[in-house]
Length: 266
Ligand code: ADE
Ligand code: ZN
Ligand code: ZN
Image 1 (cartoon, rainbow, N blue to C red):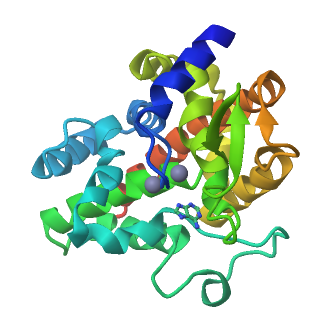
Image 2 (cartoon, rainbow, N blue to C red; image 1 turned 90 degrees about the horizontal axis):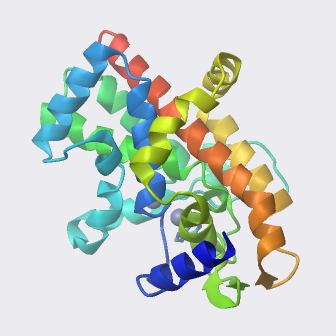
């Protein structure tokens, strides 16, 4: 295990950019692939049709679209929508107070959920809303996406993980998931058997604001480290947290997509 974590870290370090915006591709693929398994059959058909408009082969890959667009400057406006920065003390969410004028992840989820359900919009517009919605529902489950403004959600917190230098945000986006997800497809397909009906019911009752509250709580109780040198203790304590957040992201993404297509398009 230790060797796997270390070699994965080494490989991934060579790909990493200076500032990250999301779960790594595999985190997003896992969220999408778990969600797919909970979509109603008629919803799967609609989703497949919309994804095809954007050339996306699956919900799993569609979750990575918003990051692939980062190199396209006509999508620069999307950058602030991947996260929300909140103070250490949870004080609820209020748009006026907490969401900058450029937008934030909670408002983005709200907007794209409405657009996806709105059958008066063009298919192209609903398809793009779907791609953004998938990505942001996944991102909001990553605790560092509700982190502090002063350290850019952990991007500016340097840490050593098994002796390698990275930052706290990337650790949660990429390195922690990579420690236990070697084959994202196999991993995702095994997940529904690990999720009980009562967990699903409970998870589906929470609102996006509560998803943010859970992430915020995990950011401060688990993610922000007490020291810069992190290894086995930190990994073992947090891999279960990451696994749970990926499960919850998948279940809730399916919930939100199923209801968007069930509403008769308001
Ligand atoms: N990614 C880039 N900037 C960020 C921020 N301020 N908070 C969380 N994630 C980010
Ligand atoms: Zn993102
Ligand atoms: Zn991120």
